[in-house]
Image 1 (cartoon, rainbow, N blue to C red):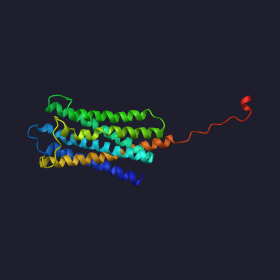
Image 2 (image 1 turned 90 degrees about the vertical axis):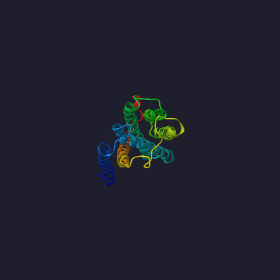
Image 3 (image 1 turned 135 degrees about the vertical axis):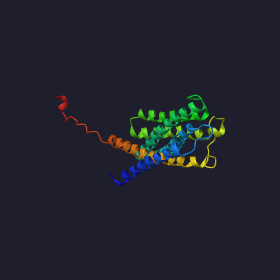
Image 4 (image 1 turned 180 degrees about the vertical axis):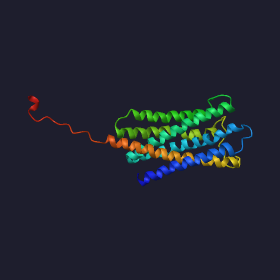
Length: 233
């Protein structure tokens, strides 16, 4: 195992340890919320999933621009890896949000602007992967993936700012000044933990995509042409 891969695995290990510590503090040490009680504790995984899903999409957006600019396989590999990890976190975000909504709003789903734009975000980036699967040529696949990623990214800032621009059941983004001090530490630890885990997963997925690209570049065996005259035999 090379030194680079060893360092990447340390990211994953550190993320797992921090996630365990942050979850312990959030579930057993942090105070209960005044109105929601213990159900609020889902925030310690829900909010970090939201933050890191959008970070993955931001990274994917940057990698997509680099892919169009440089036309190198590694940028394409990092683009698809970031999108796939972002989709996983995005899906977890929606599932956790539905559980939280059921306990606080009395319904599993509401077409609230934040929920709706988050669902659209998931579908848009899933569409990028679907489009990618239909393109066989590696160069064209990288180009179309990058273009589709840039288009899909339009929804990411919309998800973040929608609660400021329109009326929503979701509150406007909190800050350490508006959250109980006992809730800040587990929230930060889990956010950092998921970021480290996301970096590890992106690196692993990008490595697999690079291996796939290298296999596609293996030249086909040369076609043996018939010796002159034999075709007439």
